[in-house]
Length: 528
Picture 1 (cartoon, rainbow, N blue to C red):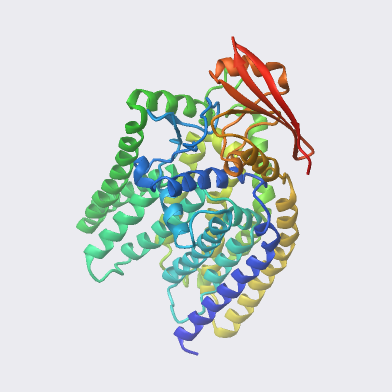
Picture 2: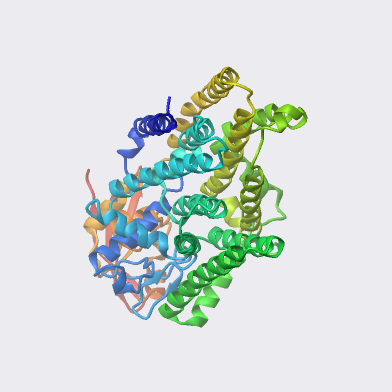
């Protein structure tokens, strides 16, 4: 069979595998947001929807606005960044490209919505698996063989719980960054192997992918830094100017992306406000502030480490088991000379793994609190482990002495992976059902019943999903006893208080402020 047919079969297997993930996630696709960490999807959709209804991203300087202009804006303790002169909140914890990309991608599907963002998530999920497949193809010494390692990589990426959920229902900078880092690795490998017919194409693609990765999430900045150092080091070792040009290309891309981000965000409310907000946010997300009782998830707290481990086990337990098994199987190949000599071109995979590992260590160390608090942050580590497994499989498979041995090897490895991943289906369903709350129903009711010129109070915590479905900022108070206090604090002339019970709005109370006292104007019982 020709190599082209073999690789087409491999691609066909990928497509069939991914179609299976669509059916597996169909129940969750058809429900409202309200599952684990879906607030980040609501966060992204809020920005995209505001852009969509108010002149597009350019009307806000391509900055991630996070307040509906038509509603009263309340001071926020969370989910906001800097505040612009127009009184709107802007999110500045990440560079803005994930919001920009999501907006224009969903425009191709009729505009930003829960359905369109989930379809985009699926496309990103498939693209990540497919490019991993291509990466393993590029690393294959013998392109005439079936790309078993690429299929294994895609299978693990498609069917691990963390990827199924994270790339199915969560859209934020972290999810798009996965695709961009994988693209960086692919372009880097092709560049290193001299696969671009003209150097200008190679430098252009290097610039593009490293710029976008840095303009999306901080992992891209770290990966750019270590890749640039690798280029510089190899220039001094091999005296090859292409490595020096690679160093300048990656360095320029990352610097421009970082500079563009700082320039954009400082234009919202000024440099001083950006520095103040970013410093406070980093003190929390770094996990370095250990003497503040409000910052409990810090690096010296053993419970924080346990939280991170439990979250990773829930999402990536199977690939942890698989890397252990494949690693043990790989050991004899290191010591049997005849098998070891068949492992060629191993330096480049080691380089890629080393660059990615250093970037991950930096991200976990610098943003320890963030990584501990958000289980979706494990995406990058899951991808790293998947890449290691598939590279080990590649060299085990490559070391087989003949076609018969290769076939036996392929059957054993594939059978083991399928056996292990079958149990992942139940794990995913359990994880998808865990922690789901119907936040959309009461939020929609509040959006329908509240005049946008009035403030909103409710007896449940404010949540990004609430914001998206209600199109209202609201403030959480436990009961009506403090309505007067907070109407005065927020300088509200009129406000509505909504009582939520059993996942539904049961009462609406309307207030007007007179002499710093909240006067009840009307009480309405909401029937459903």
